[in-house]
Amino acid sequence: MNYATQIKPISYLKSHAAEIVKTLTESREPMLVTQNGEAKMVVIDIKTWEEQEETLALLKLLAMGNKQIEAGEFRPADEVFASLEKEDQE
Image 1 (cartoon, one colour):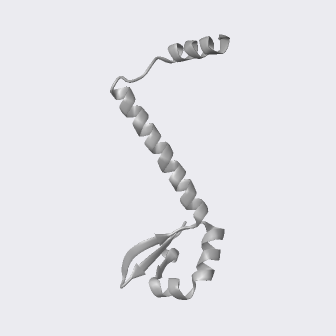
Image 2 (cartoon, one colour; image 1 turned 180 degrees about the vertical axis):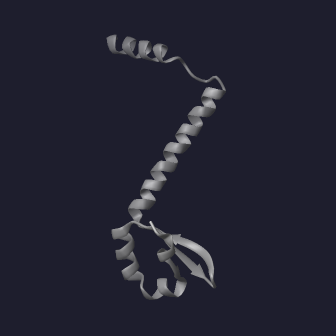
Image 3 (cartoon, rainbow, N blue to C red; image 1 turned 135 degrees about the horizontal axis):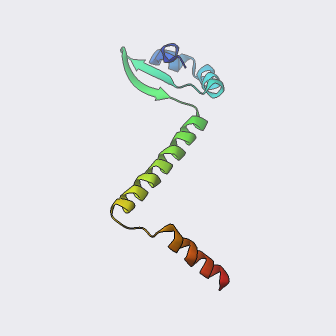
């Protein structure tokens, strides 16, 4: 992935919106938009954005789980499986 080719000024974004949508959808590469020579935003296709949101959600769950483990808020796996088997038998 060559990000250098995906850097465009905001004027390009304004005048080539339909083309940009098509290109980003096909390539799934982000586009960096500049204003007055400074990076201002990144434009990505919806599928990439959704995947990133799912990844962030999973990372948050993992972080929460790690905090619970550190705080001692967990049960050993054998206890969990035993309670599940007990529920199935009832």
